[in-house]
Length: 319
Image 1 (cartoon, one colour):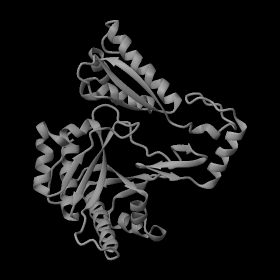
Image 2 (cartoon, helix red, strand yellow):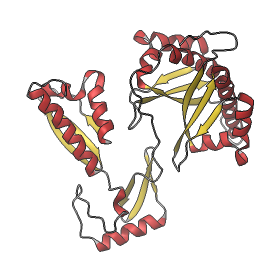
Image 3 (spheres, rainbow, N blue to C red):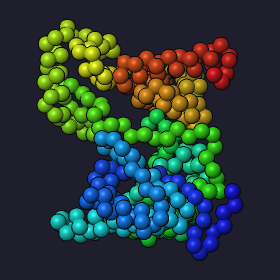
Image 4 (cartoon, rainbow, N blue to C red):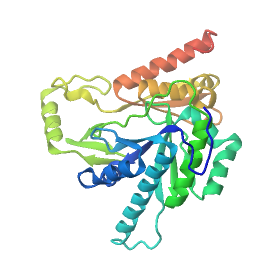
């Protein structure tokens, strides 16, 4: 793909995905969808917002690059306006920067970072924006979040440079796009009250779930964690998360982690479980692995880890 960088920007069609919180999405949509309608008309870019009752939504912007830059400028200035409005009601004196989160295929992140971080450093220095590429992939996807923050002008310059990199280094292989999970998961029951997890906090859940849980507790004999016998079909769609621990010999841990964490990330994505590997302790020949998730996630993660170990031990090498 030839891409000429001219004053008018690159005239190539491009798609950029943004990850936003519900509140940010509301600001972009505006009353009766007026704001997003105006952005679409004035920028000429297609702006799609993912459906669903999720704490996070994906905003997809597609069009010729100059249309994308216009749409980005409008979003950045809208967010700045929101910051100014929220400051008029608070005592804060310094204005926080505007922050946008791009979702970029992991296969393009290397080009964005550059050798020894040279490219990302160049982008930071030439635009004045802060740019950070997440170390881990977003859940169940092969995409990473790239967070940009700064003044709207710095953000626009930064997005232009990121677009150039993305056009010069197209994604390799298939990309599994990140899809935000609905807000209803996960649910944790404690002391007869249902809680949902949002970020790092447990928030008491609406009454009907708690009542259902209390009813379920009266109906069912207590089952050990890891086995679930739903009191009602469908009630146990989100079994509570449990934790399982494994110990792995030090000399085999490498085959589970893989080069730069590729294998462990694959296992995390395929199983949907959280997997933490403890640091090596002095004098110990083993490492502790903690797997957290639903019983199904945990058993799948265990199976995948065992498959890696078996392949290593039997000398099959790469499974």
